[in-house]
Length: 204
Length: 285
Image (tube, each protein chain N blue to C red):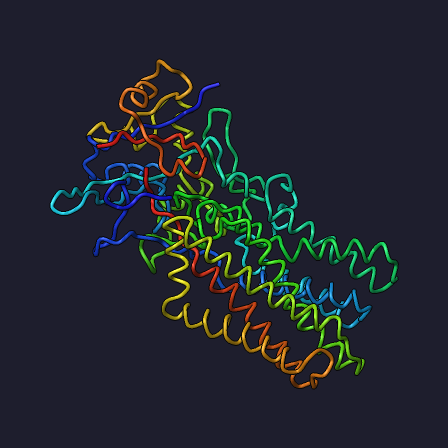
């Protein structure tokens, strides 16, 4: 059984936010909701310091705590490892948001328009309907499962100008991402929580 | 133990400190739900031990109406709340809801029909209601401060303490009776709460950077004032002093109600500072 995963090469990432824009464009998430985001990270001590970008999103953990705490079964994991939310089942208890060590989840209190006072544009209405966003539920990155099912890469991977992101099957030892993780010692965020994320980072 | 900023990829703020983000999802409504659940189930158990029906009714009302209402008001899609019964195998919310349902149904039937087996089942379910919020928080690995096996114990003991504190003056007001054993139990619970709170905070301070940040957050600023004045002084020291000064069975009704009020506000303040001090561990690899 495949285990879909992603590798982010921090040496190549320029912090340009193209992944954030591509994700917004693909999923038309409401204002304030960022399935993909980039934070700046500082390492080292003066005078040897480095400020570098750290792209963050749902880690699609092999043992997702969000799925375990979900009381309704709205958060589910597919056979290929993609963790997604069934908006028709979510009751908005937000236990998953508390449980997620990566703060990858957002609560859709209301489907706010991008242009305040003008209501939802036809573009927003279309995407809210097609993506199934429901007010009062929690939302997060779904690894672009519709694109993946159609044989494409997730939008953030396809649109990264620095080719810093790789997508593939972690369970296949010969796949590109497995080789990258192995050869360049890919690291997971918060390994101490035992969630076994499917997103690896290649250190600078 | 988490590494220091110099040796690991950690987020830092403008001043070079670690950027800890406080949880912002569980606030007033969850506080009301957690608190009234513990208080209601606690007063029910104490009243059951005394065979004191008004106390049991109050306990059932607090859980069924106030706690249930706060949960419903908090949910984004309250009409789907029944779905929370679906995952008791892994979710503490499901377990808590099932426990709450058993408690309310069996407790109500016990108050009406007075069948002892119903009483035992309702008390067992009340213990689940008293402690499940602690389990719910303790099973949240993202917030290391809460991720402690002492938290469910703390919630259970705090609930028993505040419930007993309310049952004592309530019983005395209704029946003019004195219940020395329960007053002694209350004093013991107060001491136990003090010991567990200290152990919990000491353990958290020495467990990880994030948990340590939470402990420091809890002792600084407005949270610190609430902790030291609301929890430690008026929720622990003053009621304990009152208990020792009065001695078991000799307290006046006014002093009993005052002690109950102080203990209950202490339990409420403690839950609030614990909720507010919960911070996520910054992303690191």
